[in-house]
Amino acid sequence: MTRIIACGEIDISTSGRLYRGVLQVLRRQRPSRIEVDLAGVTFLDASGVRALLMSRTAAAEVGCRLTVVDPSRIAHRLLDIVGLLPTLYPAALPLPPADSRRPRR
Image (cartoon, rainbow, N blue to C red):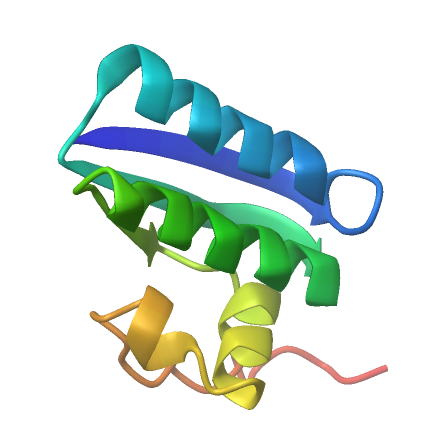
């Protein structure tokens, strides 16, 4: 198993880097499983989702399973909205509500 840690923004300007990183891991390591850790992701847009789906397809073509682990709140929400949470994050559980003790601004 190989873990790729993504952080910051995954958008039109960075999503290609994520996809190329997955392809590189597939070529060099030939893992049976890749986990993409999204805990540090602060922004995820449609191009980032596309990169994840393309990465998953590329992995499947060589017999590797790609999943997302520990998605940040923003990544979790977007994957849920587009209906990919169960596909990319099979351990999907509802996130706990935001800390209600924090004052709202």
